[in-house]
Image 1 (cartoon, rainbow, N blue to C red):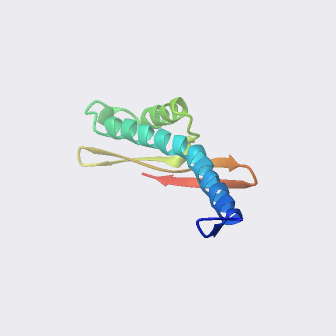
Image 2 (image 1 turned 180 degrees about the horizontal axis):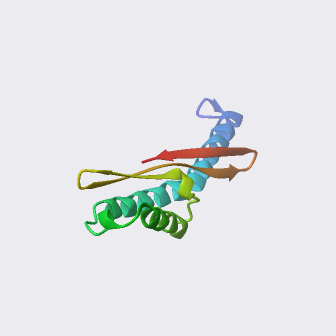
Image 3 (image 1 turned 30 degrees about the vertical axis):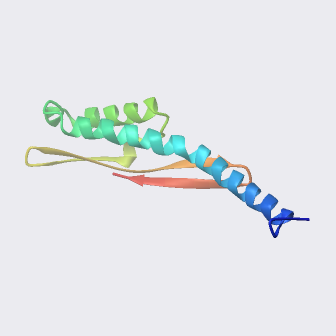
Length: 111
């Protein structure tokens, strides 16, 4: 059978592929949103004048706690604190595992 010259099986396959892409996007979108919220919070912390005088461990702990609040698993080892003049630099490199049916992917983030 055809519909407008296109076999129905091709339309069905196209719909299945499209639904698969929507499902993948739906599974990954929350991770990217949480990462965005997390990075905004870390940026605010890095620009907070009071944070410059805090210890590296206190800043690292605040960063890890904020990550936990938005459901990201960032460990203290993945957070590097540096000071450059009167600037506080917070660098992070971490991965979030997303498990999909028949596929698992690690999304890598760096700030």
